[in-house]
Length: 164
Image (cartoon, rainbow, N blue to C red; front, side, top):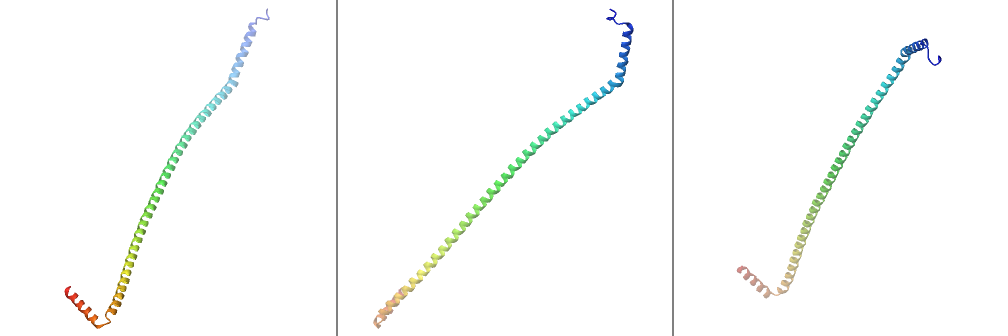
């Protein structure tokens, strides 16, 4: 049974050896191990903070990008609206100019037609007048071939002059 129960000396030396080993491990191994573990924990925490900052920056950049895209769309819509307004204005001005020009051309054509008509009427009157004079001349020549007819015509004309 002695084998199963330890001696006081064995317990003492085992305990002493254990304590020396603990002190040596604490001085030589645990401090560097704990320091390495703490350093590793700090670097992991820094990496997590950096990742969180990067995530926040990415979210911020994404929001800025969306805002820039929204502004670009608004500017594009504004430019398209202005282009439509300019197009409508140009079309309207062109229609107005065409209407004014066609009205002026119609008025010029009316004046030209009126002038031509007046010229034709004047020419027709002149032709009729010349024709009437020719006819009257021929009639008078035929009637005034004898002397008695001439005297009677002159007397009638003189009577007409006195009456007027």
